[in-house]
Amino acid sequence: DPAAIHIVYGHGGDQVRAAFADPDLSWVRQAEQRGTGHAVKLAMTAIPDDARVLILYGDVPLIGRDTLEGLLMTAGPLTALVTQLEVPFGYGRIIRDGIGRVRAIVEEKDCTVEQRAINWVNSGILVAEARRLRVWINNLSDDNAQHEYYLTDIFAQANEEGEPAEASLCSNPQEVFGANDPWQLAALERLYQRMQATELAARGVRFSDPVRFDVRGRVSVGRDVEIDVDVILEGDVELGDEVSIGPFTRIGNSRLAAGTVVNAHCDIEGIVTHGPCVIGPFARLRAGTELGAGSRVGNFVEIKNTRIGAGAKANHLSYVGDADVGNQANIGAGTITCNY
Image (cartoon, rainbow, N blue to C red; front, side):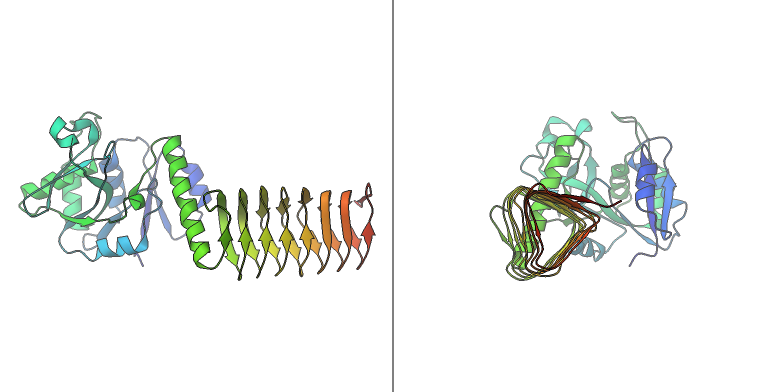
């Protein structure tokens, strides 16, 4: 576990700070965005000389624990996490010596034609001794195409001192993909969703098409769960054994008991089912709804803050709100129940 976590924030950073209101986090404001080197320099004021510093990036969200542990196991005062890309456009290039150590890192906009052909690229992630890092940071210059203080320039300094940095290779390039525009952010989201689907499939979930599935929270699953196409799970969702979810359905912050069947085109938020039951198609279940075992909610039925008893049915074209429906009751078509 880290001794401390320092987060450097700048433009729009107050929203980030509000989203992570953890008293154990140290927040460092970068009022002017003057480059990555400048950002690290601001954070270094609170870091002791005998520390080892791991630098991560907020726009590189898919980095894996195993990869970081491998990086931290390296020796020496400075190590860069690098990877190889078939199309390295946009990434800083790794300039290596004859035995693979890092002589320098050159940003894309400062590369020569020859350097642009290099496919060893910088992830931005690195580990360094705090004492040496502080010296290198203080020696940075903004004499470059961006007129910024590049953190990557510390690698040339280390090389000039006779101690070229080590390179730790990330074997899965997707872990170090970053987002510089909305399209790249969407691509990262797709990679993340595929990772989520892969993990759920390893736990026994059967997908009609894992590419057409979104998780936007935490999901726990039982055995033999089936999920059709274009299903969105939001917040905290618990799916019991043999739950089946039909296509074009959104489920948020809900607990579905074993054997629950959700048919196509349903919108579900904040409900609990207490046994096998059938929902939909085209049903809307809102917060506070509880369904008893054997109950059924059919097409074009909306239910809010209501307990539906065991075996009860509301098969079509009804609204039930703020009510308690007894066991085996039958809500006929066109029925409206609302108690304020």
